[in-house]
Image 1 (cartoon, rainbow, N blue to C red):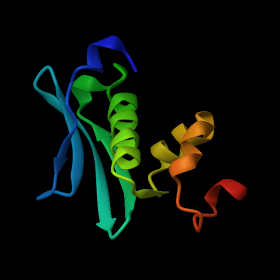
Image 2 (image 1 turned 90 degrees about the vertical axis):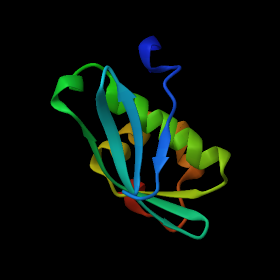
Image 3 (image 1 turned 135 degrees about the vertical axis):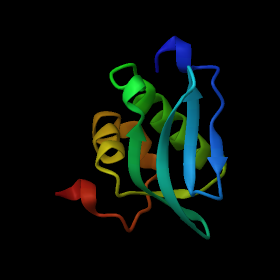
Image 4 (image 1 turned 180 degrees about the vertical axis):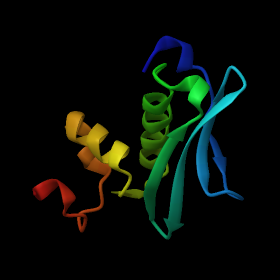
Length: 104
């Protein structure tokens, strides 16, 4: 994660079912669905003003850290999150054991 994002807090916006960060007045977010002991990440998006600045990576890393710290299991349906975990395989430790997407 780029240093400028390290101290930005992650907001779990439960009303909109999004994990969000705000940077320079703009948002990056991941839509999620929560069930007991599991969080499914559905879609990651950054506002155009943040594209190419590392905001998507920051919100993904902060969200994965939240999931791990709160002892959830992850179902990574979002293609961007899925690709991130393929590159950073250490995060497979939080992926739900019933998710078979990485085996293909």
